Image 1: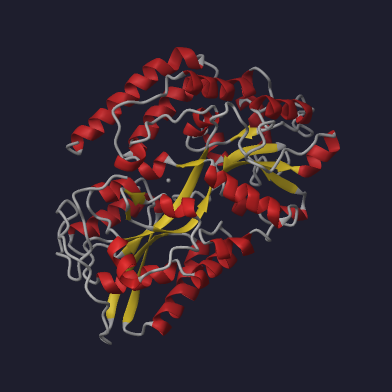
Image 2: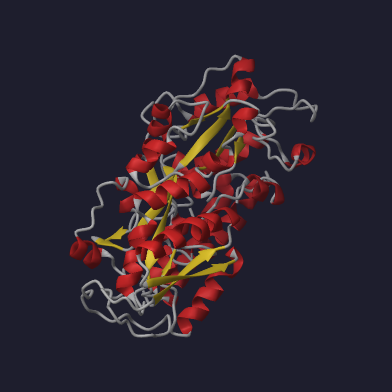
Length: 472
């Protein structure tokens, strides 16, 4: 998820209602002794060597972002457990703040000592690393070891399968959802939304009806309850809810595109819906209404909004709220029959230039093993990518029965599309264009139909510029 566990309503507040973490390079096959080259150098091609049996201590660098909870998993479970099994391998854990991640990574790569194992963080993503030739194709290792992939949720495994080659193994995976306060629903006499992604009665119009019934006392901030908070990230979700990806399908495998669809009828409908829910219907607070509602707890946690449409990090952020109120989860509503949800799958990647690729592969396998994912679930409480471990995760939510949670989790992945923040090269640059362009819509300064044609032209210029920079 590019580790998006931070509460995105804060981003919402800062921007006053703006809701706003592939492409194969030249063929790359892992080697036993990859050359220590700068990031721009092409990887050497060869087959992986037989697994090492040397008892000499080999140091593997594990590059991670700063996260107090995840550091507990890394330092207290993973490293001691792995080194006990593999005393011939030592793990060098390098912890870097999110906003320094890509700079520190590039420095190590340029020095000829790239991290052996990492996941995307900061503004660089899977597509960026892959197009620089920094990610090893895991397929030869998987075939050599007859490594069993059957326990992984298929959609999570598929996310980083590019042209039949697997470039990462998933640790966690989730989609986008509507989280809702069951107690507020009960008090207003409103029926709960469905848990099935196949339920076509759960339309955007039905969502608005519930918003209307749940919105109350908006003239008094102390008692105010708003029907919803549309807190999608990235903004592509508003278009996808109405059946339109902003980028063409090939962008999700190549990392590049020359055409965009921000000015399509469906995208215009999605972004106009985002404006209308605040400024036309009043089901979501506008900037003036928002200010007195701000607290450390968050709008959903403080029961100021009855529903919040956001990413699957809500499962983690809202865990434990049952002590205050019962909450549930619903699919993204149907804005059109082609509705999709943005999904977020985080992979562990192996460097194509690792000096010790076999040992790094052993460590990567352990990171995604059932025991490692169980520990990750216990410590981090993030949605697992293994089916066997997900069965445990489904039982973690007192307000919902496990079958409902399973239906929501798997349905979201089935109807999902991996976030462009993972799959498009230089996505941070593209997202800035979209965010700046949609600000007048969110701030009620212009209608979507008046803004998005020019915005789409600007987005296509950015896409072409990125292609040129990468020589595509």
